[in-house]
Image 1 (tube, rainbow, N blue to C red):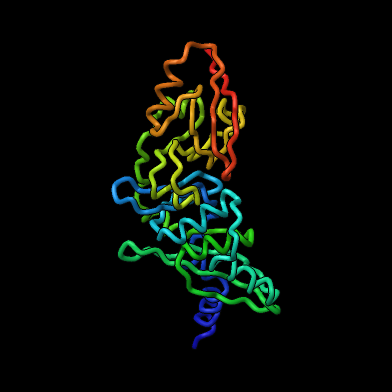
Image 2: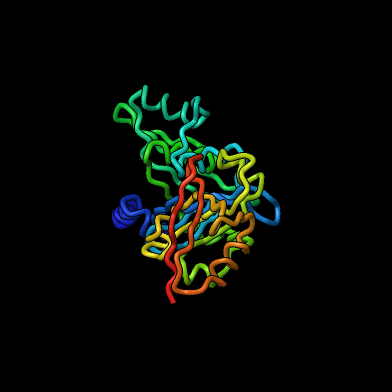
Length: 260
């Protein structure tokens, strides 16, 4: 090999990302778990930390329940599969360094778990749902490649979640179907799920949290998000509205201030 060719080859080996144009993975966080109203299938929503791009991943009911329980800090009476994996890794003094959603082929997402143990790093193939459930338990970072984000499917529409309610109260609601109640480990509960709460919003100031289930408004039971919207919209302002909610299996009363 001629000297100048050898130098060029060495330059490529030293800086592969610059030559092939690879982009760094994007850090994500788990925003919420919901049901796709068109298929009734669970979906975990990831959101990029910096620019708020969404990555919905359709997953199985067992994995959705495990992720939702960890998000809402619902303790399981016995370790489930993801608790067991966490316990095994901790027992081996292994560190879950990160999880990367790295591919989407034929509507199937692929992920890699990066483990560190005894000064060695291991890459383990995984379903994204399992990887996310374990990462949440071990407080590990979650990433997605730009290629996956570029191919992400649209977010499922959440029935009963109205734009004016989001803007005025900062609260995102979803009808609590029997399937969703089971995922949240509250089977048989009838009410309206708080899917998310905007930072600094009137709902957050009142103490409403993601994962709460609204059971009653001013002593009147509610079972649909549209009922909550109607009650808040038709209340004479200024007013204080009493919300009876269920939080992690415990009843709680909150007062929501409605300003003119």
